Length: 116
Image 1 (cartoon, one colour):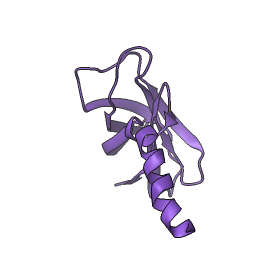
Image 2 (cartoon, one colour; image 1 turned 180 degrees about the horizontal axis):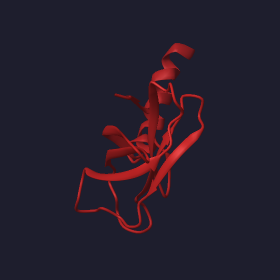
Image 3 (cartoon, one colour; image 1 turned 120 degrees about the vertical axis):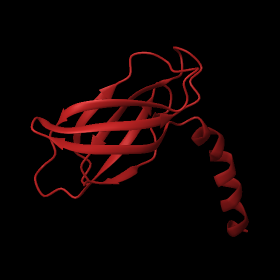
């Protein structure tokens, strides 16, 4: 009986995940002032009450290394790409996690990026 409930529970949770922000891609480049990230986000922005309002770079241990705050909805621009420079990445770091955030659901799924 429990084996039959698991798929149903997953389906019940799916609508909430459908509106979460998704990082579709990212590029990182090391510069003299730190790292520069260009991150592509997709989210069904519906206006000021529900929109992707940030993305952030995290170390694998969960430490936030940098963030780009998004100041307005992108209802007619999907997906969209925004950049942030000057992010300090500890020496020897080989990969980072990037997550997008929205004003209703919070942080979306992890996007793991291997650094060049």
